[in-house]
Each structure stands twice: as C-alpha cells, then as structure tokens.
Image 1 (tube, helix red, strand yellow):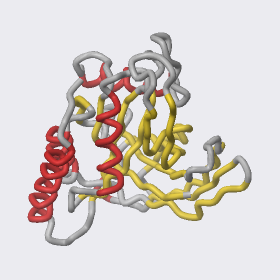
Image 2 (tube, one colour):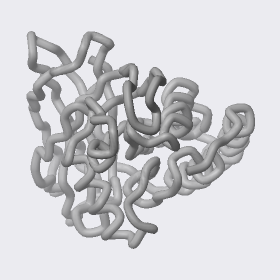
Image 3 (cartoon, rainbow, N blue to C red):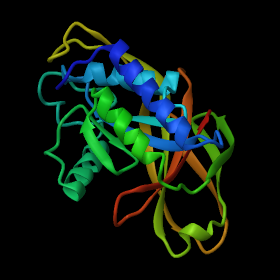
Image 4 (cartoon, one colour):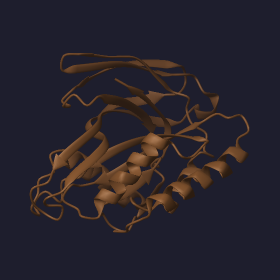
Length: 254
C-alpha cells in the first residue's frame, strides 16, 4: 500500500531507539512480537517484507528485542499465484485481529505489534511508534531452552516463572516454528517474474493451551519441521484471549 525509503526507515527507527534508551537506563531489552500478514500475490507486500527483514536483522530499536513472524495469508491465492507459504490459519488469525480491534478491514501488508497495534506493514514510522509504546508494557519473562531437531521433529522447553504481577490473569500459550529465510520465484500474479525473499516464515503455529499464573510452569513441546534447510527458529508467546494482547514472547534459533 505504501512504499518507503530504507534510509528514512532505518533512521526513524534508530531515532526511536534513542528515545527508548533514555526511558530505560537498566539496558534491558523488552521482547516485542511483530506479526506481518503478507502474501506473494500482493505487489505492495515486498517493501513490508524488506522492512521486517531490517527489523529482524538490524534490531534498530535499542530498548527492544524484536521477535518477528511472517504469516502468509491465503486470500490472494486465487488471484493468479498460490503463495507456497500461505495458510487459511493465518488468514483467520488476521481476521480475528481485525474483528477484535475494528481495524480498517483485512488487507496486506499488515503489521501487528504485540497484538495491540495494527497498521500498513511497510510504514516504518508507524512501526517505530508502536514499538516504543510496546516496550513500556510489562512482559512475562518467559524463556525457551533445550531446542533441538531430530529428523522431521523439533522439541523445546518453555519455562514460565511465577510473576505476581500477572497472578489471576488468563492467557493462552502459542508456539510457532518459522524458517529463518525463504525465497520464491513468482511466476504469475502481481509479482510475476520477481524473486521474493522472506524472513521468519511461519510454517507451524500451535496453540499449546491455557496458562495458569498461580505458579511457575514448564511446557515440553514438539513441532513438525517442514523447512528447506535454511534454518529455523522457535517462537513462543502468551496471549490474553480476551484482549488479544501479547503478555510475553521469547525466541530461540534451532
């Protein structure tokens, strides 16, 4: 929907990081979940895919640990090109955000920050503003450990400490497995003839179950691996089922 200058975007996000550093003298980085709803069939999506790559690789906001997921929707698939990474699951997830927050319809590219803020996915200034707001919200200090792969399965341990600030809060634990990088040569549709690159391409998104914050807990999870050898990452996050807000997020490379 919008194009952007990479120089302007990085400069804007870096400036936002300086503001964030001043607000947090401890130097701790607050984890923030960025979900990009995108499609290879959408000509407006490649700039958003590149912005997500910058946010993932450069980590330009000093006080934030940006954890990204690229979720490819399927409603473009009937318009000339079937996105090989698309899933109706991600379309349904985007629709849920749209219904919950009364966003301006379902569209691509859309970036959702911490399940709270949604906007055009290629807008670096909006991303900077949303990230700055997100790092001011307290998060559950969850961790991922013992990540390993055995054939076509990946396993990991998710540890959730007791946090009195969240006592009594209802939440759902989700775990995603994403390819670090993917590329496609698009033969048809709006991006026909182009080779597109993506980061953190979500291949599995699993709802593990409800979380009880009355005590510390550990979850052992198993996920199927279907990537093409470009490396993977496990992303776990806790989401409030009533508000949709992300209460905690962690990432570990496989």
